[in-house]
Image (cartoon, rainbow, N blue to C red; front, top):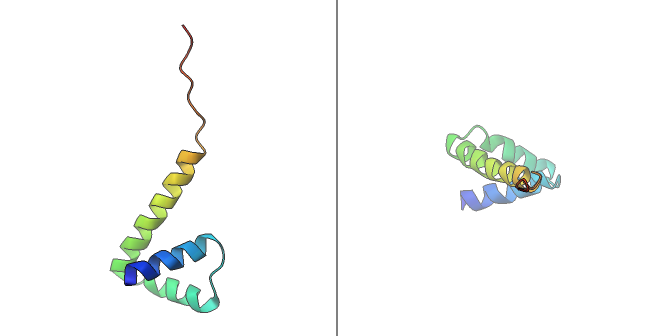
Length: 63
């Protein structure tokens, strides 16, 4: 259940839609080592996907 809530909070954070109460909950989670690890994993996946989406396509040189 905690992981589902963490996913929800991260999603709202990334959309800039966190309420004040949700922000407090998110920040409290940063003090919990298990949630901190899970937040880190979720955010890493998100930013990796952004990097992947924004990398230019590599075109092989013509011979």
